[in-house]
Length: 284
Ligand SMILES: O=C(O)CCC(=O)C(=O)O
Image (cartoon, rainbow, N blue to C red):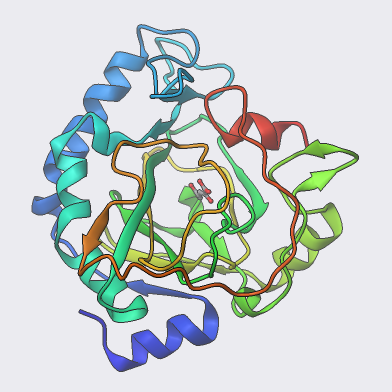
């Protein structure tokens, strides 16, 4: 699926965008389902639905209302939609991660992150590994573009090479803010690159890469389907804030029956009491 140049770019930069990995036609069922969820959100004035741990599955931005819906997260959409499950069970996303991590892969979790026009949704600087530590860091965050991702739409921004650097704390003054310290964030702003591409493109990001995204300033929605896939011998070390009945399932190859570990030191992450990490980041 990936060229040698794309594989090298991933390991050198910690991120690579594969343009048009899927056709818009292939993604239409996912988009249709997302539009139905946005319509459903108009009937709720706060987070709604339920995940297996009882927390809301659908998260909305403060200010969300019937007239101006601001659905920002659908957790574990694969549990409630076959279109989202299908993408995890075969096809370009899985094959691209096989090219990066090898034959044996597990699914960790997935979510649909949207920034509807005027919603104001942003994501502060963080690394995924400090939310979801594993015994080793052969873990990839795969972001599938369900819309054309252009500069003003609030694309993911990543600091190239940051996957080789330190793990930064997400705790500040004893509060888990789900974001790195302001001075680290300011440095990230200077070095970040935007992950852009047409609908159907795939952004593959290393779990330790620092990333964020800003507000959608356009009149079009920005929708990313985000899945975390890991080497099958990378074993989760903390409960996941996005539980799924498919978590831990081998989605390619076989279970090697082994645990591979690397050395690192970090604080425990915190499961949000509300629907998602957006509330934790709002405390920062
Ligand atoms: O939606 C985005 O722009 C990035 C999302 C992200 O970093 C996350 O959900 O962990």
